[in-house]
Image 1: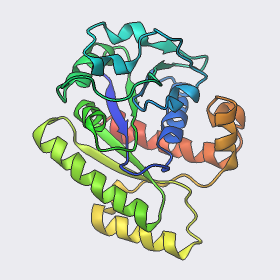
Image 2 (image 1 turned 60 degrees about the vertical axis):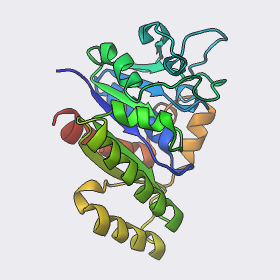
Image 3 (image 1 turned 45 degrees about the vertical axis):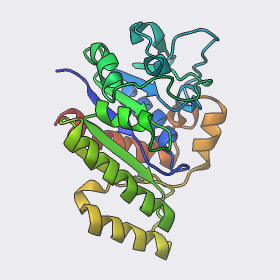
Image 4 (image 1 turned 90 degrees about the horizontal axis):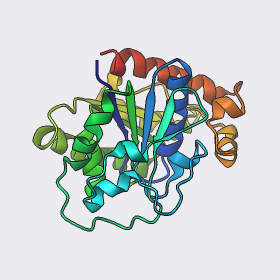
Length: 253
């Protein structure tokens, strides 16, 4: 069976997309699933989270958007973590240089999907062509979000993009799951926002969530996933629950 492509996306910044990508990839890899992390955000933080650095002139995923026809296999970098490779970003990428069709990334990734069970695409907080390209490549979208008013509005905006791409560009894009982050249901506002999400999207699309944990930021400072930095923290427990969901509901579906 070929791999499943999951885009980790949200229209709003600061919702832990990269944190989710890095730590979910590490959890899946630790269980024996071969994972490719595609760092589509030109900040390059998903690669940074695994200690991956790109030298000037090295190929990156953003070569696709320059019309480069070299295979992406040349850009893949192995990590020191079990079963996880990274397709890194070009931190100097400043936008499309040509009219690239929405399915260009999907076409470029197709030869790689046979070699990986999961492809995780970390996207930038934007509605531009890169985000559309990620959605056009994916089978499922994971939307990390904080539980406050602006973030919930961002989820709604993103959902419109999701359904537009699913109905016009990518018939294989079927799944949408919402992952609350910085989750603390002792706060009335968070409970209210969670209720709004359930009312709008249905309880089945709401995941258990990731609780606040300073170890997540500390782990990024060490350029490693949190389970290899502080394996006995609550965020590691939460990412294991997320990993269970991804395996049972997305990969094995």
